[in-house]
Length: 308
Image 1 (cartoon, rainbow, N blue to C red):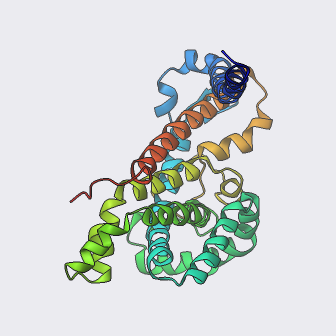
Image 2 (image 1 turned 30 degrees about the horizontal axis):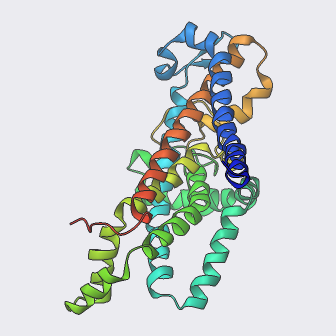
């Protein structure tokens, strides 16, 4: 073995330390969270996930209201963000002039880089008053027969938090969906045009069909971002332990309860219950992000079959 081969092997092994260190870090976080939440896991068991009572004084803890709030706000945020995000991605990838597409793409990336606390401040001073004075009275007047639009008009609550989440995740949907659409081989679109299809038919029947898994991956990635969002949601969701279909009601999410109550935990069981919530949030975020990355990779890895 010559000197060049030896140096290459040494260099490769040194580089291998870095990805291994990432795995060790993730495993360390998991085991620390799991160890710290053992008192809660042993005491409450599975009841922790379906119990609705959160009483730090009596040390009786149930995470269902927080799971409900997380699911509700994330779902509503996706309903608001997905049509806008995918529509914008299609326009930027297929219709916009190159200079316009590049400029807007830069703005989208800048939006994704804005700290969430800035969105929270904007929500407090702009969104919440607007919701309280205009949006919620309007929805209550015309859609008040639905349980989703009933209840007190505070401005803060599930609906305001969902709108903030939608604004936060839209850049992620646009950016990833645009890359997925651009990854579709041009030969498919050219073949569709040769057969006489219109541009929108080629986009919907060919481009979106080919990139369906990747676009779904973008949505799932945005879902992971919405589930883990903390500061912006904490600032405008109202922070109330409740399970209700009303979008006007203040509530809690898994992330916001951690941000709000961790510093107040004055007993081992209280702290363990909060860390168990953190463990759940950690595992859900990892699973969601792995699924999203796999779906995106299935499209961007190279030419494949158009799914009909």
